[in-house]
Length: 253
Image (cartoon, rainbow, N blue to C red; front, side, top):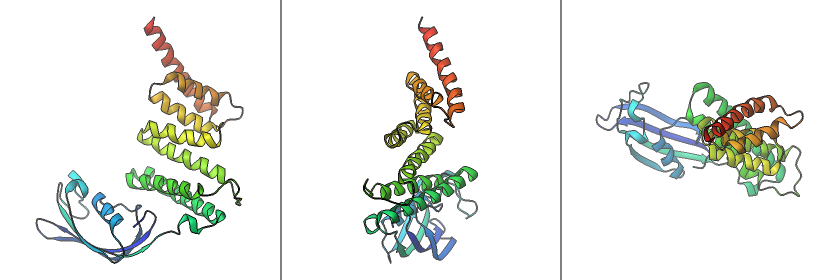
């Protein structure tokens, strides 16, 4: 199953050591890659095809980990078994089968769904919805990038691309993946060279990487951009990084 595919599955979850049945699901429908599933089960579903059944024996680190799952009755550090059948797979239309307007609308839908997952993940402190959000954003970009400069659509396709890169950068800030923040900010800036939100996020990444001079220049660029909504935040960041630069200079004297 591909990501964003709607899949229909049945499974029986048991404990390996006792054969106790903990959960049974019959022809349950959900979107692959979004629901909270054990890592090993998600990997197996990705490789399975319609109509296929599989007997999965999952080690704790691929199932419910050191804490188990009290709600299901899985003890800590326990091997579990999934007897699973993939009944149906409904993948989204491939990008080449859509016209430019349809690709734009699909990308917009993916962004909106990604935003909903991100909001859920932040609210409930869950990793899976946040990961799903990033995957939705990246899928949206794949469809958008199929369009050419000659293609016209009703909507701001360029702005949508920029916002998707910025959203991925925002998630990377939350996870402290500073290289990814810089990469996504750069992609946004390649499309809109003076985008102050991209400059600010790139500056934050450089500040965390202790590239203080680069961070200072980026924060200053935002502060000096007339009417920038991010100016106040950039001013605070600029003050902090300037203080660090002065401290380093004083120490070197």
